[in-house]
Amino acid sequence: MIAAGKQQKPKSEFGGGALERRSISEQVANRIMAMIKSGNLKSGDRLPTEQQMGIAFAISRPPLREALKALTLMGVLESRQGGRYTVTDLSPSRLVAPFNVMLSVTDYDVQEHLEARAVVDLALVRFCVERASPEQRQRILKLAIDGRAFHDDPVAFRLIDIEFHQALNDGAHHQLLTALAQGLYDVGLDVRRVASGIPGVIEKSVAQHCEVADAVAVGDAEAAVAAYRRHLEHVRDTTIQSMAIVNQQQ
Figure 1 (cartoon, helix red, strand yellow):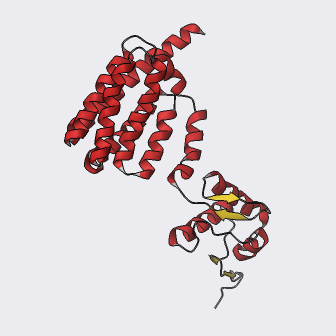
Figure 2 (cartoon, rainbow, N blue to C red):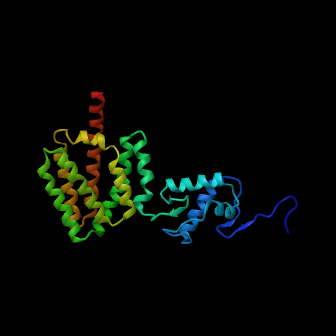
């Protein structure tokens, strides 16, 4: 029996009971995410019209559109012609895209950046030692050794540096961490371009790449992680040095 003064909340076949007024758009987004997690909605599924969802959730269009916009910015939904929304492929690269945009517009903090890289990259290095195929280990080693030819060519070194780090990520066989690592690698690139022109920086980076690659090749996770940590410290220190150079030039 319904208590006096209260109204029974209508039921919704689309996602359960009608939503309460508190944080309506957030509740809608959470309800849709729950349907995706449970498999009720899958990649490629087209959501009902806004009118149909408004009826199902028993809400007006403004909070519904706010929720749909939020999920679109997160990379979960995409808007198709005609105003209908579709569940995306939910690939890691798509889902971390908003994260990458956020990093690109946030005030750059080199210490925070390298701490984040340490968390993600060191985990990937450990996974790489455990999971990389023999062919992948050979590619990592070759890229590290080939870097010795580019001590005096910053542009060429930056190219092979990207390939080296990508090879480590590929060897880890972890899509989500790899997507995060790629986003973190791209942060502060303008400053690190300056670092690659400082005498001795490339030579030291290449030597550290070789230390990491040697440890990966023989399956020594602790040595690989320790060598990669030293490399990140080198990146941090030279980035700080580059920032000082840039500031002097301004």
